Length: 168
Image 1 (cartoon, rainbow, N blue to C red):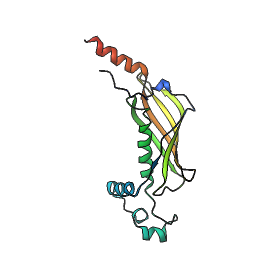
Image 2: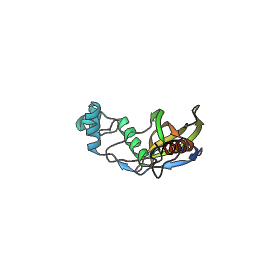
Image 3: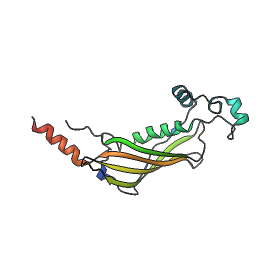
Image 4: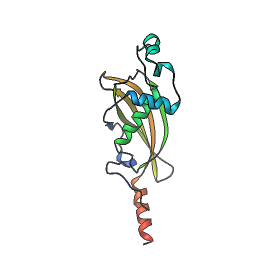
């Protein structure tokens, strides 16, 4: 059976080193913070208690959990569509927090292809990205890191399609 592939999807061989992708923006809301706190169980007062945060936070306000920004970034990356049907697995990710994200900030993600490594298996290859989660309003990169994705090679989908047709 042929793997369904989205219209913007990229196969391993479609990526080039230094190629850059920029996502749409998404504004972090109080609802995001509340749901993330409920989902994770992280009710540290710096995240959920405005009075505490005004007095004790170095930012003077509640600050969403850092991984909330990373989770939002994951969704923004998916909306690019470049992994729709070709992304097989996330192989690794590093995360460095450089600046705070606050409720009301609009985030976008910049992905830059760092390296392309064919897998030992002929069906896939590793696409290594550098990424930054940018706060649009402040012009800062709040989170940086790397992201490694296992992607299908074009030939793998062709083979799957010809095998499906052979039995017809």
